[in-house]
Amino acid sequence: MQRWFTLTVLTGALVGLAAPAQALTPADDPAPAATVVTLGDARIDPKIPGKVRVDVDYTCPIAEEARSLTVSVDQVDPEDSSSRAFGSSRTAEADVVCDGTPQHRQITVQSKTVNWIPGADAVLTATVTNIGATPPAAADARRSKLAAS
Image (cartoon, rainbow, N blue to C red; front, side):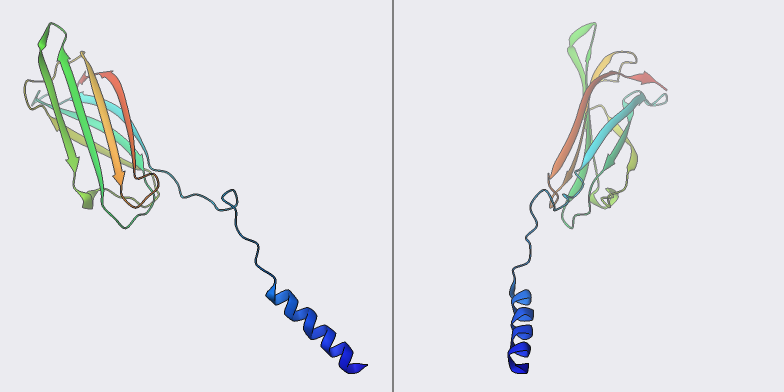
């Protein structure tokens, strides 16, 4: 009887060990934080009216691959539709911090054509790419009046 009891206990223990582990479903597995970017104020440099400073807030998860922050500004002269100021600026990869914490940057964008016009509408676009993260990029765009500093 003792053999039967020992065999039953051992068999029960082995069956418990061999039971498959419960698999995580997508609902149980927490997804990594997504990359988010938000445009802030845009102000024309008072000393160099061909430059505009754009505030950008972003958060991106840790990723081991390439990342970048690009800001573009496009403005049509309200009095002359053939005159357009535009420019973009890309931040060096080493300067884009992707560690899951909120970041704030002020990016300077130089017009490639004419000076920026204070009080006139402009289209602002900011993109953070974080290759290796899901999704690999996030962007924000809006129409805003450029403020004089």
